[in-house]
Length: 444
Ligand code: AMP
Image (cartoon, rainbow, N blue to C red; front, side):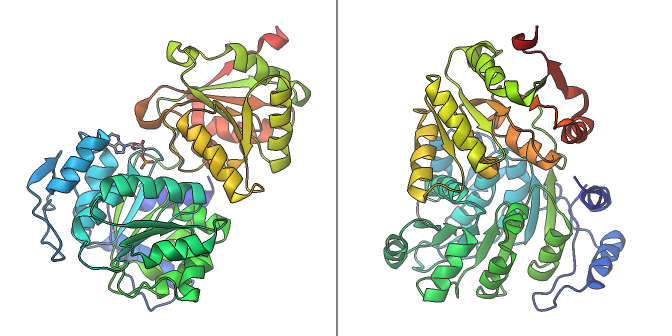
């Protein structure tokens, strides 16, 4: 975490605040301090779950009466049945806070840990406020990776049953996506590059888009999608509602909020870059040359809770580079483990096949670059192994957040090699005593 992030955390995120915003005013170096001063003085919005009314006036003729309840949130019959079929009986904290704000049509900045139910938090308002009778794109969701786009689409399809959801991302034949868009889409989920591609070709029109969701916005900026996002937003009506979700809120996210969101409500669930509490975190000192042997020892014996030992769980191993993933996969396969790898150098078809197998539970052992660190939700992952140490705290938190999804047990193992001490120290300082030392039998 950089200094900037910490400063912002202390200044502004304890409760929702308003920022003065204009879609037309470019952010300038002087504009940003003005926004912060405004925060401090200011006409703060009430906390969403305090005296904010939970039901809002219907915003489109397609809306159904919200005469059922999901916790304290009034929902319509189709959404109620969908939630029941998905096994969601109570809203998660992020849903409790985000849904009422979005149902009221307000712009929102959501800072939440991964695995907290963020997708349904914005999916539910889409299901309630869009109109299935209007045959055009009414909402878009932008995600940083193809895998996340597929995952979000799946959740939205289950939740927004009355709506057509189309997924667009690079690496898949564009023709298939054009056909799907032509058959009609209410909600389009995709990566910014491919979404812009469709807009440029004229195969996607966002003239009547009412809601834009930016998911994992910090990651999208890290990948270099800032320009594409700007262009996409400019092709949507300024009257739209915008919800931006981001694990961290560095200055450039603030700038994006200032430029594109209108008096957003800020919702923060959990600390910034806080590890998921239930993850058991253990680190092992291991020389680089011994890491393969250490890993094997671990794969054979180290799952520590009975549920892990039963072999139901899956293991996700992180490496820093694509070549590292390939090397480790071939080593493991030679040693008889049915491991596979995923990284950005694979074709989309290969990535889809690997993710499909892992999601379905057919594949137990996946070696990945950070491509798999963000947002992916595979409940059966019971252990994450940082074969190569994460380069910073955020990376660590995101990687280990792949286990313990929705409160299930899980362990995060980190190998600390002779070159890793500096990076480890930063992580250790942040995580503190929750990170325990273990010892591999190799060295005893
Ligand atoms: P997300 O943060 O959207 O990736 O969601 C994390 C996991 O939580 C997914 O497996 C969701 O299916 C699950 N989930 C989301 N909301 C609820 C809920 N209200 N009750 C139970 N599970 C949920």
